[in-house]
Image (cartoon, rainbow, N blue to C red; front, side):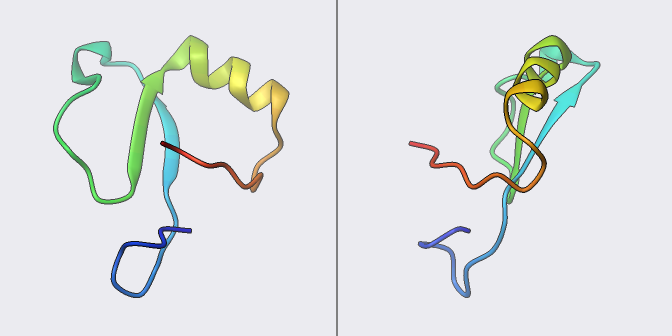
Length: 54
């Protein structure tokens, strides 16, 4: 949940097959990761797991 965003909201963490986009331009609600990294993360944490991003 975005606590400093007006009205709150959710952030999507997803892979990309275009690694040149990382870190890329600022997005409103998405965090791009390399496909291999997001696959490792998905094995560690089920969909919907709350995370803190700093």
